[in-house]
Each structure stands twice: as C-alpha cells, then as structure tokens.
Image (cartoon, rainbow, N blue to C red):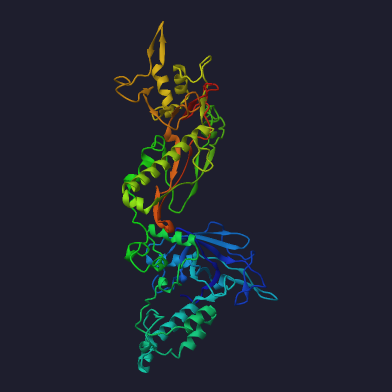
Length: 597
C-alpha cells in the first residue's frame, strides 16, 4: 500500500480453461462513457507497453490478508481496437489459488492496472477528462468485478484501499464489545480478518454496529454492490465463515449449462474440485456425492497401459522428441537452410576462398530456415453400460488398451502418410522425400536387388548409421526371392542369420528390416521405405490424458471413457539435398521406391 500509486479497473476476466484467464486490462472508451472520476482511456493513450510485454498477476494488488503479495501467475499483453488484452496462466498451487480461478469461472473477477501519479497525464475536455499517459507497470491484479460492469473504471489511489481495510478492522474489533474495549481496539488495532455468518440463530444475533454507516461512506466509491453487501451483514467478532457455495445453490442443478458441469467434472479428474459438484445430492446412497459413493468413477488408468502410445509404435518409437512448454501449444524452431553442397551453398551461403598474401577477403553468411509447429489433437471416446462394467471387469482394461493402441495407430500412420492439416506431416508427403525410379522393364508389383542398391545410394551418408527399412508384409516374399546374379547363377541377398525360419526379420546393408501395417501395399510408393527417423521432429504434450464420467449419459446408466492426446510432427528436412558432386541424384534421410505399375 502506497500513497503514490493509482489503479484503474479494466474489463471482466474470462476463464479460458486449465487455469488460463483473459480479459481487457484497459478498455478504450470515449467522453460519452467516462469512469466515475470523469476520465477515460483511448487508443491514443501512451501506455509505454508493447505486445508481448510480461505481466505478473497478483490478487487485489497484494492487499489480500491471506494471499498478500503472492505471485499467482504470468501473462502477456496484446493491443487491439477495443483495448489492451491480457492473457495469463494461473499456477493454482493450492485451494486459495484454485478458488480465485473459480471466481473467474463464475465471472466475478476483473483486471486492474496500476500506474505512478507523476507519470500520468490528463487533458481536460468539454465532457470528460482524457488520460493521455498511463505507463503500465508489471503488476496486473485480479479484483472483484465492479457492480456497474467494465465501464466502471474508477481510478483510485491505493491508500483508499488501505483506509477501507482499516475501517473494516475497526468495525470488526468493536462489534459487540464494551466501550472501553472498542477504544482500545481503535488505539491499537491488530490485523484480523473480517468474518461473517449469513445464517445465525435468533438468540445469537447481534444488532448491526452503528458505525456501519461510517463504513459505507468510506467504501462508497466501490459501487452499489459493496454497499448492499455491507448493509446486509451482521458483523461480529469471533465468527468464522462457514458458508459453502454448494450450500447456497438453488434447488436443482447449480450449473448454468451441461458444458459448465462437464468442465467441472473434467477439472475434478485433474485434482481441482468445484464446490458446486457437492450440490448434486441425492436422498440416499449414490454416485453423485463423494461421501455417499463418489460422484464419478475412480480412475484406474496406469502408465503401464498408456506407455505403448510412444514406445511400441514402429515410427513413433524412433522419432526425435522435442520438449513442449507447460503453457505452450505452438512454437518456432530455427535451423540452417542448406539445400545444396555446391560451393557457395553450404550452410546456406558460407563460402571460403583461397587468398594470396595481401588479397582482399570476400564476405559470406549462412542462411537460416524457420520451422513452425502447432499441436494437433487426437481423441477416443468409448461408452459402456454400468452393468457391463460390473459384470465384466476386464472390459475397462480392454477399453484402455484399445484406446491407447488406436491413438498410437493414428499417430504412426500420420508420421508416414499424414497431410499435416489435422495431424503430423508424413514424410511420404514431404518435399524432403527422395523417390527412386523403377528399373527399365521391371515388372509391376515387384522389388529387385537394383532397387535396394539405388535406395541405399540415395540415403544421406550421415543417416546410414541410424536408418531402418520399413516394409509392408506383402514385400517380404519379394525380399526373400532377391538374388545377385553371378555368372549363370545367383546368390541370395536377403537371408537372416540362421535362415528365414530362425528370425522373422533380416537386414539389408546391415540395417534392420521392420514390417509395418502403415506401409503401402506391394507396387505402390511406400511399400518399402528406407528412413532415418531421428531426422523426424516430434512434439508431445504430456502424454495421454484420460478421464471417465458417469454424468454425460447419466439417464441411460452409462459410463463414458475419454482419451486425449496432443502432438505434432514433421521432417527436420524441408527439402532434399543436392550433393557436392552427385549430379541430379539428390539425397535425404527419407527414401522410397516409386510406383511399379
């Protein structure tokens, strides 16, 4: 609390899900819609701020007696035609912080900005006062939404809040006490909490303190909502707030919509309880109240079941995994833009020269490329009747395993064949793919040894130690029948150690051959692939998210199981590479055989 800081209310805060909030820190209005002080902001106001500037989030400018100056989260600002938008991620580390987010979900919070008086500039106009300078600090506070809505942007010194708190403490200490006790409290006030109880028995209620009128006059600048609240309270020392939001819920469902209730159920599975769920009470034992049987089924998902998502897929198990930040779903990756090894093109333009003594040096520089990525979403939703779950306990494990493998299937299919729109970009659809032509006169739907030799030659040299062959099952007979002509006979070129009966897979050029259902059928591009999957970039957001609920289909007595997986992927190479001395035969970490029709 300082005497030289001003605050201004902005717009209401919206809950964006998973602890994220957004709203206008400053709203642009005009002389016809000033605040209670007759002042207003416009797009021409100097805020000394740029898009992306960080803001630390506090509650009520650090004046809350419990949270004090605790930092609730971080956010960034963005300017548009309506004002300065602030979006932030709350940490929600304990019940207090989760309660604040609950207030945002209920539409009870707004943004409030602060500025120093000696930096604030105003211009008096005919109808109102226009604020021409309001430098924003790094403090963005969450405050209770003013009663008059976002247009109530009263600018007040923080010492006003200090006076309010002091007045509340005086009333609290003196209520119901003898005159000498009240005098003592006024002389040496001790910081205490204002406590209220909405429902007290008749014999324990006390008359409203006569200084309520004085208190109302002090806080009148906060609007009619605060005045009405204070007038309706019986203030008495020694009482604790025992009221629960669920106890005050109206008869029936306390949620405004089904979507709001489902969001609360989802957040409960993540460890954040919405007290309104307690209001879904039945008259007897039920699954709608935790103490009466649990309002949703206890999750039984385990890491061992969900691990196949990224460990057993033939392609996803070999990709290069990159981190995703806790508050991020997109990003940019930079790399060297090298498409040719010719002189003057290496490292995108770095070139060396042979210089004689005293000769002039020639400058060169590298070129960089930008790889943009944004997470894509995969989902599986399964319904099962509660009778079936009770009578066939193994069904739940089947659902979990089936959902996990389905998500894994979709991701691995996209890594190979994806178009990059709603999922990862497959390397078969990437400009970095090298396609090796068939041999002259080669029969349709066949693979010959010359195909294998040429595919190996087009693989980038640095990838030869990490690459693997991926084939469709239909290709196996073709590999087993391949031979290298020697005179009038031939020598088998694909024979696993101990023979085909001893091992299901063999190797070509020392690299493993892996059967995959994601490869195309024999004779089509993709039936045999030579790929270094360490050159495929893959982003994954926290693994598979799983949840279950009995409420979605409550009337039909069904449980719904939901699985969500977010990821993104694309080749690290955005094009093929022309070798230094290789003619037109480009190379790549991803090589496929062209169609043999």
